[in-house]
Length: 171
Image 1 (spheres, rainbow, N blue to C red):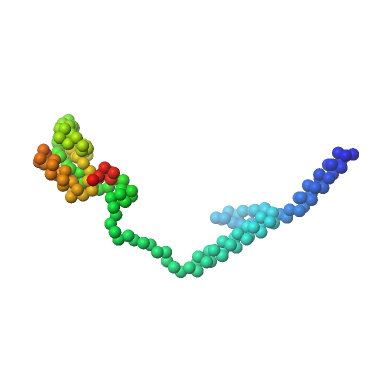
Image 2 (image 1 turned 180 degrees about the vertical axis):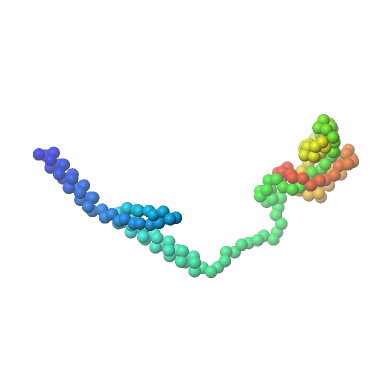
C-alpha cells in the first residue's frame, strides 16, 4: 500500500510540473528555411526582451550621422614599421660579379668572404647560364654606398642593384 501511495504521489508531482510549464511554439524563417521552435513561455519572454534591446541599439546607431574619423599619418614610416608590415621588401644588394658557371660563382664568393668575412654573399641563378654574386642587404643606394666603395677596391665592376631583401638583414 505504501508503494502505491509513493507511486501516485510521484505521478501527481510530475504531472503538476508538466502542466505548470507553458510551451510556446514559434515559426520563423532563416535564409528561406522554415524553423519551428518550441520553448517555455519564460524563455520566450527573455528572447523577446533581448530582441527589443537589440532593436533599440540598432536605432541609436542609425541615428548617429557621424562618419568615423580615419587618421592618416603624414610622417614617414620608420624602418622598424616597414619591416613589421612587410618582412621582404624591395631594397638593394651589391652585385660583385656576373659569371658563366656555378663553380666560378662559388670561387668569387669564397674570395669575397676572405676579404669581407662579416658580409653575407649569395648566388642568384635566375638568369642562367649567368650567375650573379650578390652581397649585403640595404634599404637604399645611399646606405649601400659605404660598403660599395670598400668592395670596389677588390671588385671594380661592383654595382648596387635593386633586389628583394629581407628587412631584418637590411642596413
